[in-house]
Length: 163
Image (cartoon, rainbow, N blue to C red; front, side):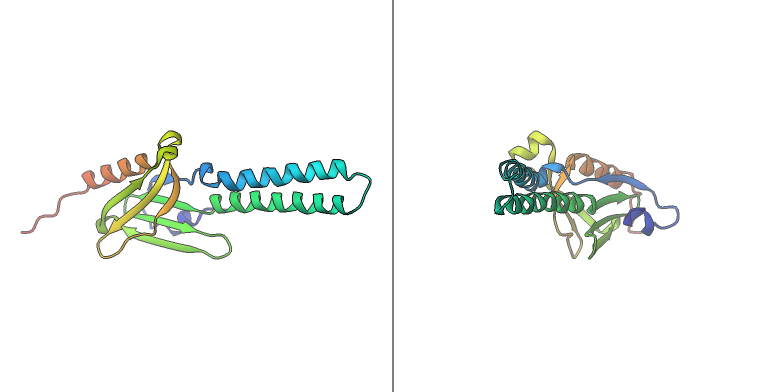
């Protein structure tokens, strides 16, 4: 299955940079899922004779698996792509939210990184444009590389004269 961005590219348009959501954004979900799985496994071993403990262990394991699966699907269905003409963002699997902004309308790209973000190289990215802004994307891997690519695209764009 091809990505949303690949399906909406114009003829001759090329991808300059494709950003990903970091796994660190979903660390809490992963941790909760693993704890539920571990609790389920412990309950399974302790309740091997049968009874309600076995049923609770099965429910905890199922819930843990669901929590991890939801986090993985959310991460893998979020796209942020910089092309030579525009910035495209897409979120969602069953329901989809997309926003596209032409590069000529981009005024700035804001990157916010806390201490953990600086240590593990992720941050929140907000694209500010003329008249509107894209909703911030949280937990983007290597956000400074995205800003550098956008800056090089702006520098490479021909200057418009007012004559």
